[in-house]
Length: 436
Image 1 (cartoon, helix red, strand yellow):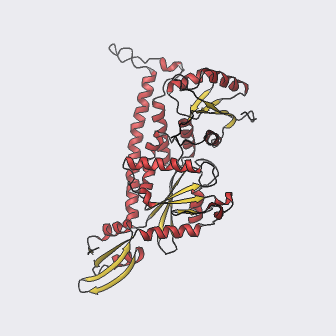
Image 2: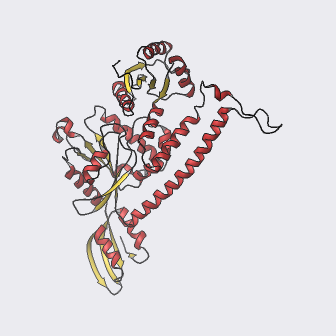
Image 3: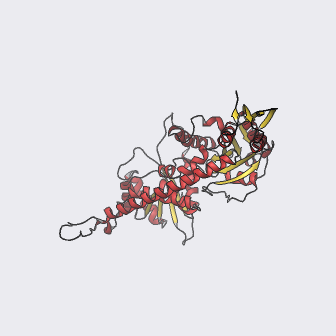
């Protein structure tokens, strides 16, 4: 399909190579996947003048697409004055090079497109470092181009230096050196973030993390609950860097709400590795709010994509294996489908509209109820002189019984597992835990 575009804009074509899924494959419909790719391209200012789904009988090692498809696409590129073709799939370096030669324009794949979006949106130093690392990891295997300078050789030193190294080898070495430095800097960022988490444990407040498919409305919900002004737009990957704010629940408990980067299907492995420090915020959360766009026709597949990433984190030990027990599904954008009654909540789900505020009290109550359900009943003996420990228990738990004696006050209190760990980390040296 071709549409008109201003001549001054960067004109792009989005092509989805589509292999018919077998009956066991839960892949999204081709139309929905293509629409998402077009949205990704538009989010960085490209004007999509051509979009199409090309059925693949077999993946061609040289070009991915069939010969006839490449020829037809070449004619479209020339006729519509297209300067960049986006292949919504992962291309090998050879496939990318061959397609660029055949089409006579720049060709990028899904991974490169998402990396470009992340590079444009990253605002903090951590985000910038993570994106640069992912870019370099991606580029390192793609130093196979038509540019002639990559074939030149640098002379060696003295008479015994030999012909020297080729430019492509020098470029690869420089990229490798930069990757080592970036990983070192990101490791420092990871340690700093870990220190911040330790400080929050001492404060301490439970963490509630927002996760979900990109453009599900996480930042809008974050703003609605906290009164913050985090950038929120109806576009894919509107925000990348995690943000935290404190909120108060109906019971009076205070929690920290964390807004994280959105997920997407076929998230590049380079980004999953690079954003490890950001994903660790999800792993540390006491409650995970999985925000879903209930108005999206492909909402079920988007849910599966998010779960797949979280399951991958569980397999590599980044998040606990029982993470699903901490999840509350938040069905957002109910206003676009006729209201909350038209959606209908099920056990474990809360239906809301973050933009109108409808259902937010129910969501806060659900967070409160989930925290109460997870509480443990613990009995401590606290010295009379430790007023700070007693005040901590009253502020962060529910003291159900207290008896004062010569050795101190024995207090029975209901605490969340996270708050119990935080309390014992901070006051374990001066209080005694009696029989649970």
